[in-house]
Length: 299
Image 1 (tube, helix red, strand yellow):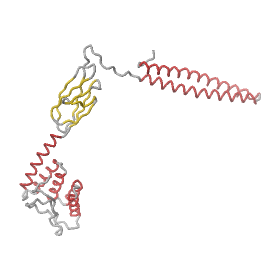
Image 2 (tube, helix red, strand yellow; image 1 turned 60 degrees about the vertical axis):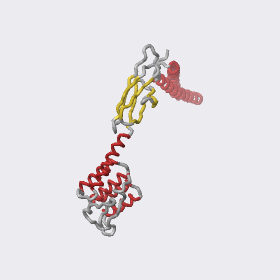
Image 3 (cartoon, rainbow, N blue to C red; image 1 turned 45 degrees about the vertical axis):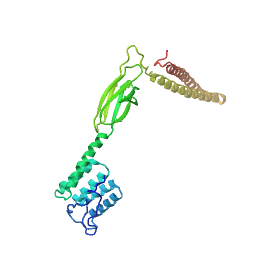
Image 4 (cartoon, rainbow, N blue to C red; image 1 turned 120 degrees about the vertical axis):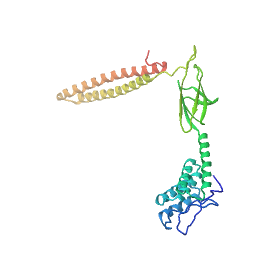
């Protein structure tokens, strides 16, 4: 905000060692509480803040002024921080820093101008709060209802919209359900939530909810796993029978026990593979049937 009374930062005494302030036009100000040396950390931070302010880097200016203030708690620096917050249109902190400046320098010559600035910024702060958008979450049972806010379509539930503070009217519509209306009051800075229970129309047909296909996917997954297991044990059976054939072709009488063990292992693996194949195929078929019919169990 540009005003003649508080126009810009002015360096009061670059060579005299005093920490300067944002000097109002045609108004004096409090003398610095101390006069640090030109090379002191407080003065260096102050000058860095002035440079940032001139470059319109107001957040950086505030950081440097605050750094200087921690070393030299001086009303001049508080005033400068208030000016920087004002330029950022961050009216709340600007008001508080201007008030703190007047508390620290109650006899400041520019007090009338600063008080007028505070009143203006308080009005702007209230206006900004009144115009600020606030999130409203709208849900319904069941989901998927069309939402109108103050007569304007906003989307389907679940939905989040941003509204200005005040009273608003919601309308929810869904096929097979009675239209629902609700009034919601949006408070500044307070996110709101509204859930609406939709009532089925008498004799109407509500939208069918999607069938639960959880067990269909479980059956498919289990069936697939069993088919894979059957393939594994089938390969093991083939390997054992192959080893038995090789041993029988070139073996001796002393290899009879080993041959019998290989044949027994092959037979056991073959039986396991057959069982897994049968169970896996049944699981896959059941899963496919449930997916197609939309039921949880195969007929």
